Length: 196
Image (cartoon, rainbow, N blue to C red; front, side, top):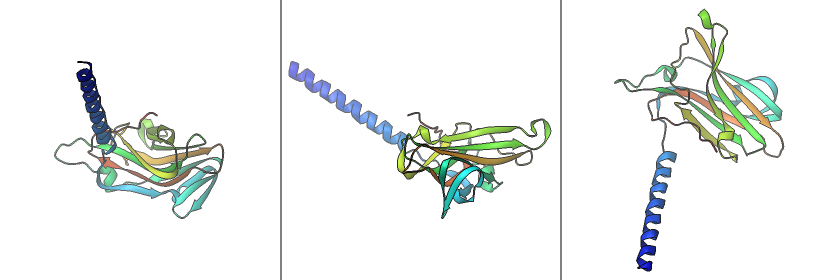
């Protein structure tokens, strides 16, 4: 009797483990599919607002303790596209960055600035990717979010849009870096940044 109960418990644990593995695979393999051609920028074309950076090919690396860069988002088909057929679409923000852990941080914020009307001059943060929400790595990693603030539509008639990137570090030898950014539209199911 005791042996049968032990086998049953082992079987239940195995099934639970398999179910957990399948759920983990489904969540991590979820891919976002852009609609149209998104707005895209390499890290090296950002305008430095403050701090010291080094441009190496298409990548920008933090040179000092902190820096703020801005990237002008322009009206392209991929930020204005709809899926058609009444499908729900949302904005996605994607960034390829390097943050090796506790001593680096890269924050990528999609922002709007009102140009006319009651909102003229107002700056609003629409979406944020924070490297501290992901495991650190001395290699570059690409992360995307959508649905986390992505339910808005771009209005280039009344607003200007830009991406603001803040990079910080406390120690060397690995320094924060940014390789590229994308903003576009997707009809994929929601995904938001994890909390670690």
